[in-house]
Image (cartoon, rainbow, N blue to C red; front, side):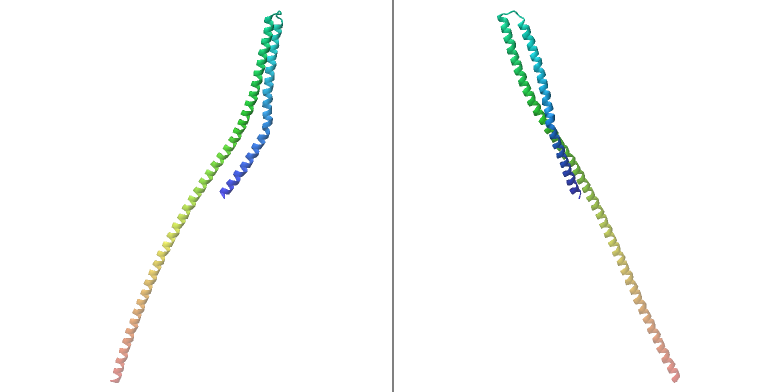
Length: 207
């Protein structure tokens, strides 16, 4: 009975845990989207700051007198900015990929933790039930053994009592038989005495 109840409880807990997991998975796209949006906003702000700095450098370079150095400086600033923006874009893509991977790993880890905890709790519960059943079986066995010992003791006492009764009855019968023999003997003696007395009386009358 306890095993059936334990199985039903475990099935109900698993069903509830699956519902919890499904509900959590439904929330993940929104959380994932929020994280991505935050990364994009940070990237946008970084690009804006870089462009602002680049414009400042260009403005300062344009104030220089027209010369080959000015032209080289402008070209260098533009090339450096292009490289900077390229690096920022690569970092942005890598940040998004890392975020999605870490996000999914964390979700899987969280759900795995739920199931590990569920299994551990029911392993503990099953061990507790098994211990209780073993203790109850031991108690029942001890009680049964005690009842069996008491039954054997009662049976032995009854047999002793019966043997005593049989012995008493045998003694009583022997005593009764002895009294009957004695009584028969006395009757025989009395009859003999009466016979002798009668014969004696008869002889006296004849004389």
